[in-house]
Length: 83
Image (cartoon, rainbow, N blue to C red; front, side, top):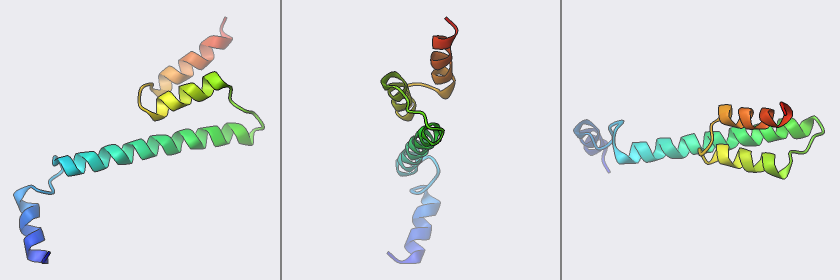
């Protein structure tokens, strides 16, 4: 594609910030960032010589899948120790 055609398409809104292509890219990027954050958190725990339990790993998977916020994760884990 020639540059001039690309510029015309860009101006016409094909590549605007509200296009489905951009929204899909941003969603994929956000998912990758969440998965990276979860992997980093688990690596940090393991670097301390600890291994998360099955329940904890399931909660982290929920965070990575965006079905659970980090605040909800924290509350669920801490609630076990408040009993």
